[in-house]
Image (cartoon, rainbow, N blue to C red):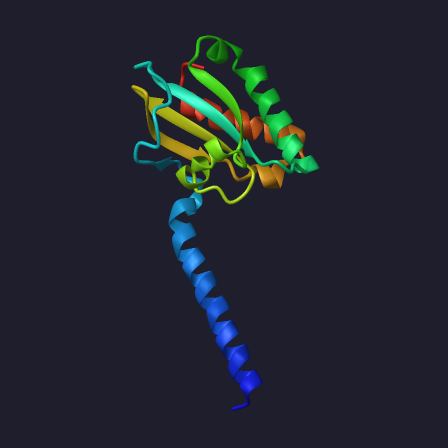
Amino acid sequence: MKPRTIVVAVLLAFVAASIAYLLLNEIPARRSGIAQPVKNVGRVGDSAADKVVVYYFHGNVRCSNCRKFEAYSQEAIQGAFSASLGNGRLEWKVINVDEPANKHFIEDYRLITRTVIVSKSRGGNQVEWKNLEKIWELVSNKPAFVKYIQNEVTAYLGNNT
């Protein structure tokens, strides 16, 4: 075999192995978009009541879609859940994961890009969360985007919205 052919074969094998590794680690985490229970990622608050937190995670560099994600999500939440926001049952948080104090969220929620996460806690401990990945598909359709966010938050809040 020629040296060039060997190098190409080795590089292709490396790429294939890397892709396989990533897929095997990501597929269970993303399985059909179902909410994922987690080990105690952290204390959300001191209240013993159930609480839902909606996070928008961004970085230092923000494209037009990233700005829409935040604006549309905020509009969806403030427009439909003012009572839950007011009584503390729901929180809206915008977090820059490029800040050193917020880097842990990348591992906590397995973040690979800008996204919205809905998190539910009981007694101050997070019990489940969901990555709302469809925001990328819906960013060009504001009404569908807003409805998607509202439906997911409603599911986490239950009947007490």
